[in-house]
Image 1 (cartoon, rainbow, N blue to C red):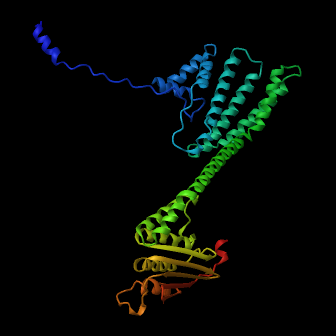
Image 2 (image 1 turned 120 degrees about the vertical axis):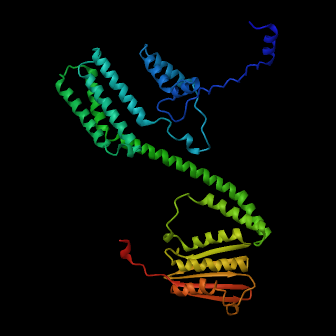
Image 3 (image 1 turned 135 degrees about the vertical axis):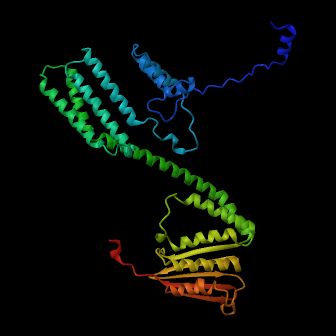
Amino acid sequence: MSSPARTGWRTAFQRPPVQRPPVPRPPLARPRSCVLGGVSVALADHLGWPLVAVRWAFVGAAFLGGAGVLLYLWFWALAPLRPPVGTDPAEGVRRRVDVPWVLAGAGAVAGVAAIVLAAGGALPPGFGALVGSAALLVLAVAWEQVADEEPAAFAPLNPTAFRLSCGAFLVVVALALALTQNAGGSGILWLGILITTFAGAAVLVAPWGLRLWRELITERTARIKEEQRAEMAAHLHDSVLQTLALIQNRAGASSEVGRIARAQERELREWLYTDGGDASPAEDRDLAAELREVAAALEVDHAVHFDVVSVGEPVRRAPSELGAASREAMLNAARHAGGEVSVYVEHAGDRVDVFVRDRGPGFDLGSLPEGRLGVRESIIGRMRRAGGQAAVVARESGTEIQLTIELPKHDPSETT
């Protein structure tokens, strides 16, 4: 038995209990991507229960006079949707319900209901076969839709053949029941036979209709994005792009401010006016487009401004030597001249001419030392080996490099 002094000593040095703040529960909100209404997912997240347990609770309550169905509908009507994640403008036009799984669930419920009611004698003779066949058909359509979205998982199977088989089986069952019934049969049964016959015929159209619906949703999403991009481009063109152009004109081509403004303007224009598609193969790209990319890269590293202009048809499948010589001429102009540099590409018939003109002090090709092979080999020698010509023309206001080459004859048999 401990003494009072020892007990007080322990109490004085005993740590107080840690008061942890309660963890707030997630709000009762339904997800936007769900199988049916998202009620089970919302309750499971809000209460911290397993999702499977919540779903089985609704299924069990459904047999208590339909209380589970009414409770589910009540939560579906009152529980709000979760706010969209991100700023995707297509979030509001996407389908919230996964159609294949809804069809599969409806078919399964109809099949189970037909079996239960037929066993209890609550259905007319033959009506259970109709409901069961319809449930099988709905499951077949749902299976094909799931296989269409995930073809790798259903590669060994043929969902289309299974759907057609179920449709034919449904029509056969309906016709067999119609032939075995007399004229005074139940009106409900005859209505079921008629509906089943039409359902068997419509099974060929249902997947195509769902596929068409998805295509319409995709087209609408793309149109909304394009409209928003066009509106943003018009707004930025009237404000930001005009400001960047004014900065370039005031700062000059050789200033650091002008160089940064040109780079930002080019990036902004590429983001606004490109469709985001895949890049074309290297052999199919236009020569002028390649030179514009070279100009953009050189403007970042040098105090220079390139003006690339092309005349005539796009120069596709141009010899690689022409592009390499043009890049070398532009690099020399950026290094030694700076300022404003003009690049002119002309395509007339089978001939391509490229002119690179700067406004620097100029140079004499004959006065260059023997070890300076940049112009002699990288430009003139490269064009000569490719079957073209290159010339360096010194002018009073700068230097112009002229590149000329004949394109190979196009053989029509290569494209057939």
